[in-house]
Image (cartoon, rainbow, N blue to C red; front, side):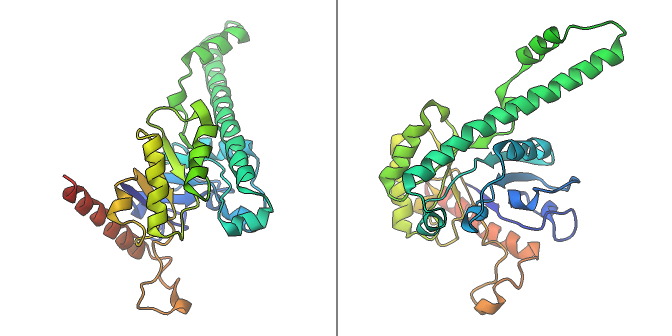
Length: 286
């Protein structure tokens, strides 16, 4: 299982992202970013805290442009789709039900992918035309350029958008998976949302039900803590992330919870503990 500690200091300095071999960053941290920063492997979280604050997401096109712009800054392994969590607090903010949150999650998934494709083709068109104009003095037919660019298009050239399953009960997640239909292809890397703060038995039950339905899927879990990443759960996951990395240890009071939140060493130590647990779990299951 790959673990991505969440981190909020998006910079190239001592407290920045360059310190981590893998990391998860919220869209909210780079929405207005203008310059590149040092980073290795990373995931882009959609910034769902907007929903928790009673706000709406920016347009899918704006989100897609942000993904495309920074995809080659380090190695962007995946960007989560714009999902709508289904735990009670989120539902109370939107005043909507689980079925609507599931529909909204899928409703945003396809446009994000479509915008990424359109942005990519537009970029490739511009590069091709610039090359033709630079290399030759002859006139060119725009239709021929369009045909050439489209013929060269390969979907895997685009940043990967992670579809996310939402729900409350295990059957909700199975229903949501069926609603995605053929959008979730064989061996897809797919997120499972709204599991944070649940009992381990609930998390295991939901993940097991999904794997029984689609054993080929590579499941990613958002926001699981060390307590939840026990061997029985890690064995069902391909990857996970947690914003708890960098929080203070139990020995400190609640008022000092964020005392070391800007120190990468604490987040790295947190991630290392989970990586060690993964290694032990793999050895145990050999």
